[in-house]
Structures are given as C-alpha cells and as structure tokens.
Image (cartoon, rainbow, N blue to C red; front, top):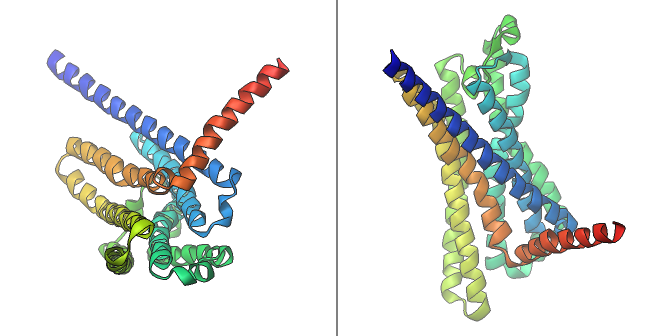
Length: 310
C-alpha cells in the first residue's frame, strides 16, 4: 500500500509540474506577443502591409493561447460546462485556428510579390488592400467552422445543449462521418496552402539564384521566411491529427493518454505560436530595432519621469 500510494503521489506531482510548466510557457508567449502588439501600434507599423498581417497572426495566436489554455485547465480539473457555452467558445477557437495558417499563406504571397514582382508591390500590397485581405482571411477561415457545426447542429438533439460536459473539440463529433467531413475540409485547405507556399518557394529560389549584392541578401532572407512559414504550416497540419491520435491512445491506456496530450499541446499548439514572433518580430531588423527602442527607451523614460515626480 505504501509503495502504491507513493507511486500515485509521484504521478500527481509529475502532472502538477507539467501543468505549471505549461502555464509558464503560455504566460511567457503571451507576454512576448503583448509587447510586440504594443510595438506594432506604438511605432505606427499599421501603415505597412506585411506588418498588418503579422499583427493578425499575433492577435490570433494570443487568442488561441488564452482559449486553449483555459480549456486545458478545465479538462485537467475535470470542470464541466454546458454544451451551448462550449459551442460559443469552440466557434472562436476553431475559427482562429484556421485564421493563423491562412494568414501565414497570405504573408508568404506578400513576400513573393515583394521579391518576384517588386515594381507592383506597392500597388498589390497597399494598406487598403490588406484591410480587405483581413476580411477575406476571416471569411475563408470560417468555412471549416461552418462545416463542423452545421453537421453537429443537424445531428444533436435540443436536450444535448443543456448537458454538462468537459469542453473539447471531440464532443462535436457525434458520428464518424462528421469527423471525416471535418478532416476532409481542413486537409483540403492545407493542401492548397502547401501548394501556394511551394510555388512561392520555387519562384523566390529562382530569383535568389539570379540576384546579387543587397538584393541577394534580401532574397535569401525572404526565402528563409517562406521556409519557416512552411514549417509552421506543417505543425498546424499535424495539429489536425492530434485529436484522432489522442482518442486512439485514450482507449488503450489512460496514463499514456495524459502524456501524449501534454506532448501534443506543447509541440503542436505552443511551438507554432512562438515562431511568429521569431520570424517577423526578431528576424526583421526594422521591427526589432523598434522593439528595442520601445521596450527599453520607453521604460527608461518612464523611470525618469517617475523620479522627477518623486
């Protein structure tokens, strides 16, 4: 009995440590995103087309982190909510889970236009066009969400909405065919995105081979950005398969299910969210200098003003 209780206690401490580590990572990523968003608005980057799309990914990733982390904690503490409330939360989560990869594809196209069609970049990537592009991104991203919930609303009884359940995306799959519809729609989207990114990569590669001097450096930097976008998209694509993997593992071993779910959340939910600040927040010289100026100079100025007041 003592050995068994000590094993259980060790498992509980191990799980608690993982939950705490997830919260630390989430808070760290949210803090970085918040600082980048403040820099975006404070330093007038909202007048530059590619930074507008960058801000969309930051806001989308931050919202996904907040909602998914809340659901992660609710599931960890076995806290149930009514299905109708879970639907409202999940609509936002599923929508913005698609907004991020669709925006990444739009950012890749922007880099393609900037490098392969520089004379038309100002015309095709103006601020006005990107505002319309944001609306198009949200419109395209809403289609998978509509497909998922249309099939759910057609199958669920009215009494089901009043039931209390642990909120998770799996609860909307009442029949196997609904899972097939969701998987088909999302994989079709990602197939189109992969084709677009591969097309841009090939075109930029051709320009990179012919470029020279400063243009060559700029082109190869754009090529690396496209590769990182492709890696992000790959992680987002694998993320689609995690619910199916978790369901399969859950039927085999509960302890293994907890480990797999933690691994999937960290690698396929948190990791892609930290790549956006890396790609455009830290690798972009213009934005990075503005970030340093805003983060350090403004804090220094605030301390000086506080000292004068005191």
